[in-house]
Image (cartoon, rainbow, N blue to C red; front, side):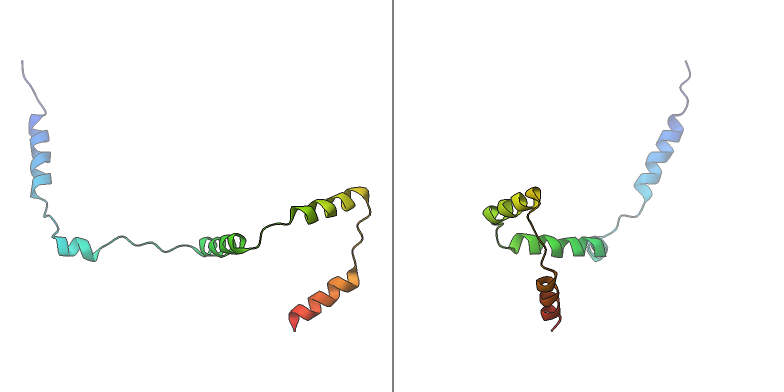
Length: 89
């Protein structure tokens, strides 16, 4: 019985053994780095704003939701416009 292909395997092993091994200083200088994308930065800012925000007043939310469902909620356009103008100043 003749076994073939062992020489190819041995040659591959020699090739791997002959590769120069980088020293630790080179490996340290090529440390991995990470640069977050602009979307990740924006998400981080939004997440921080949500977590720092005051808790939701569920009693107020449920009262407003009931008004909307009943068709009784009226938007005061003048008050909204006044707040928008004040916010720009």
